[in-house]
Image 1: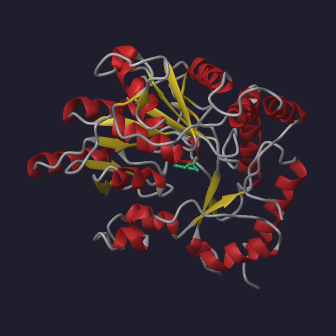
Image 2: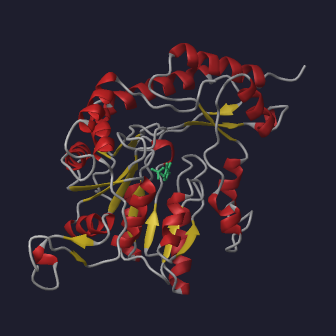
Image 3: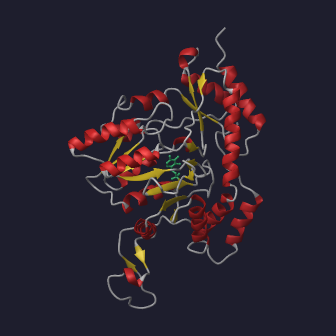
Length: 388
Ligand SMILES: *Cc1c(COP(=O)(O)O)cnc(C)c1O
């Protein structure tokens, strides 16, 4: 089976992890701050807070921005459930904004209409989470202008997008947002096995996230309510978690980061090849906005079902039978049973649902060979052939 995504682990990665195993610190040592500085410097952010997953980073981002009961968080329905669950962890309420049918990202025009309505009803969101689906940047300038006007904060879910650029600057620079979150899950662009990171240019937000990552405990006398009782002394000043990244993970991440730009460049090569080879088939290939340089975590096609004699599921199953590990990103979050129980219904976000009825993620990862890519295209052409 050609998988839809796969990590690339080199001997240098293995050596970096083994060196940590032989060192004094498996956690809370020098590797995590080193990895944080490296990523922050690469993307042009002031601060980075490494954690054990992007899910944890989203949770900390929401808490640092003060999200709580009575507040609203809005995101795209076409995302992994974690982009929405972070609101619920904080006791806040969740809503979605439908996608743009070309970019598959949260639609800024739909966002503006919803904001106008929410303003009249007195239920404006506190946080909006744009998700850079496949690594393609959202229309951040427009979303940021709306944030200025309606007073919400922006957390970019850039789990797919490290190494990508928006208007010539790396995603994570924070020009148009308060906090940006990366994921280092093995299918993502660079990996630490499990892991995530929150980036920000705001000293206070960075401090809060770092505090909450480790139980809400401080050893900094300046932050304590009264004098330290001795050199052993620490204080818990907030209710935090253990969301720390290990030294092993950070060393792997540092080693992987050296190849980030090459990984994204290879993903672009493969995607261009797909674009060429798929041109004659009844599928819609991904549209790339000229303002962005996608991280290209995923290559998603949409089936032109009215030109194909078989349905979405039949095409999907036929590809799997031919050894092509296709996938589907994502089931619209509002259609999940947990969200339906909160009152969301099929039909609430029609563009997202139309997308879901046609989308298939084709294999794409840096070590994928040109021959493997051709094998995927041949299999696809075969299953899409007109019925005799
Ligand atoms: C993978 C992913 C997450 C969660 O990342 P973890 O590191 O696995 O917690 C969140 N949002 C999106 C869009 C993702 O793709």
